[in-house]
Image (cartoon, rainbow, N blue to C red; front, side):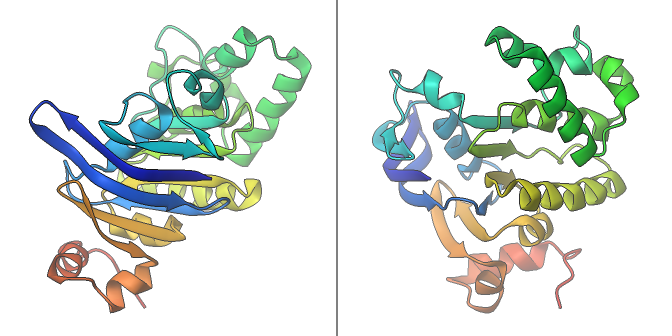
Length: 244
């Protein structure tokens, strides 16, 4: 679905991502993980077109992502950022329906889609009339997820969507996210710092360090057959991860 071919990103003398080849499989959840500054969020922003690669190229379903194609391709992607990124002066419903309304989508069709997604994500209907400041952190993330899914995107991009939530809310939302991914049969790219989250949600985990891919595979691959000492170190550092 998404392919990086020799893609790198520099900010002046600072290297955020070294030349990278990577494939994101259709209808699978791929998790990008690693220490801060390793390049995982950079990859997500390159895919959505918020950044342009310094070298190489990205393809989305065979089409090169470029300034000429990105506006059309973005409509085939859903994007969720940390803490939701909701407009504070709009209600939850207005946030969700902003882009569909701008694109002239039929109101009845969008209302039906909204009802479906609210039920799927367990967002109470009375939350839709509230402003973001009146919602809990978990509710804001549900609204942001619904907004990203409204136009039935082929790919869902999630940039640390649960990082700011307390552990109980985060655990509940992880369970709900996995159910949503399974129900929608969605292609997902998820950025996280949490190996527990990566192991729970990911079909494939890509561990990065200093702008390079260290190892890619299932959690069992990384745990049982680490490519080097850093992989074991990274897993063992997250002591709250319980594995069977």
